[in-house]
Image (tube, rainbow, N blue to C red; front, side, top):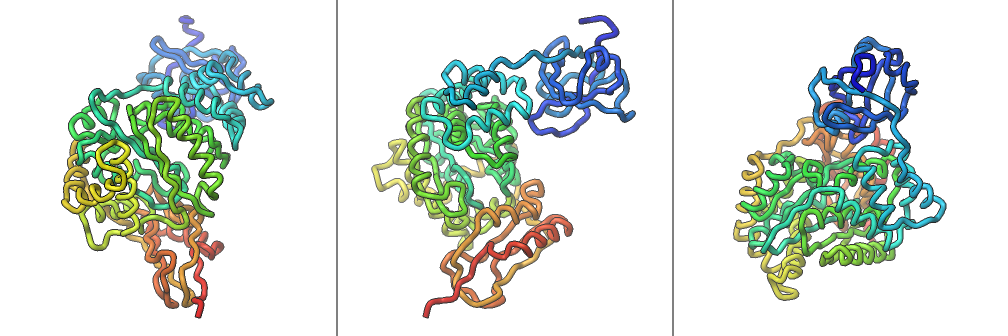
Amino acid sequence: MSDNESFLTLMHLGIDTHQQLVVYMRHDCHVAIAEGFNAHGRVEVRTAHASIIATLVLVSHDFLSHAHAGLSDAAWQQLGRPDNGERAWFRHAHAVDSMSYVRGKLYGEPFTNDSAKEIINDIKLGRYSDIQLTAFVTACAGNRLDLAETIAITRAMVESGQRFSWPNRIVVDKHCVGGLPGNRTTPIVVAIITALGLCMPKTSSRAITSPAGTADTMEVMTPVQLDYEHMRSVVEEQGGCLAWGGSVSLSPTDDMVIRIERALDLDSEGQLVASVISKKVAAGAQHVLIDIPVGPTAKVRSLPLARRLQELLEETGRALGLNVRTMITDGNQPIGRGIGPALEARDVLQVLRNDPKAPQDLREKSLQLAGTMIELAGKAELGCGAALADDVLRSGHAWQQFEAICLAQGGFQEPTLATHRHTVTAERHGVIAYFNNRFISRLASLAGAPNAPCAGIDLHVQLGDTVLQGQALFTLYAEAAGELAYALDFLDGHTDIIRIEQECV
């Protein structure tokens, strides 16, 4: 179309809809009337250079004129960041053919390599509405994906994005399946591994509902939004990086699917495996270590579930050419003291700098993971990797390497902590017997983390500690008084965050 009566001029409205592509237009503009558009319908938006399929929101307020169509941030980016005033044409979106495979799966028909590829490609191109994405997530939820389907989806996710290749390098990577507050081992492991000359191009996620992801923690110290070429140059110069995966587009459908899973509070073992393995393949890894914390309030709550996940991860990795090793670890309590970006960054720096105040559980777990990765890559004999990692950490080489990576990514800054604070104390004498990891994460999030990077929780006790009445259990940090009050309101109704039991005599 090119006549004057069929187009609208575009405006970037600066509305954050996460990955959802949204276009806004007046309900009574000539295009909406002529096309018979309805609110939340799916429409094709086409400029002279690109096209997208977006969800339509109809408005009646005068902030948008009859001659304009507004774009959300995600729609504007997917459309190639058009200038304000650029022309666009609109029509009803064609039906998404791959949805027939999703409906088939809901009725028991397994995904194939071809159907998985079509579905993932349509998701990547923004052709799935949130309702359609929800149907896909539901079809995959629980144990509904067998090994063949998991491999098919993983392969399709790899093919949908960019890939790195690191010729003549031993490339390693790690991942944690999550569900454990703190546990910020990755920056320490990357520093140790790359200081030994191995290659570790680490991309990490941001938090969606948790108090911090590795990318959030790193961002309080250094830039993490590296594009493809910047990430490549950092890795070539330093042997590794600590970047936000969303800025590199290695597995672009992953964040879209995760967003829906978190909103529905639905877990899919197969989708989790596809998410992890696709990113490792795309990053160019050869050897991968995966941490699976197990505990009653962790993401993985029993050993049988951990064993099943272990098998899926290792078999899927093998099918895509990866040497995957899994490690089942203790998920009964947080790792480290800090929960929230800046507090976790403080813990990381204390470990790297060999500070006597460093949390020893974070130090020991990081050495355990790094040592296993060193052995996996053939840099040390079985059972000798942890000692080599400890030497690198004690010598200061790991800290020097971490600082060099940060400088290559754009600079280094010290983390700071929020000024609004409240310390929670023990109501009676006894022994620390239980941590509710889910409630602890929720409390830190209500205090503002990760959007307020200096907010979170500083733990003062661990399992097995003997405490006296009035002794500090943890300190809440918030950047605003209202956020601190919000978190304390939650605490009033959830007294079982840390359980104290009477000592046996």
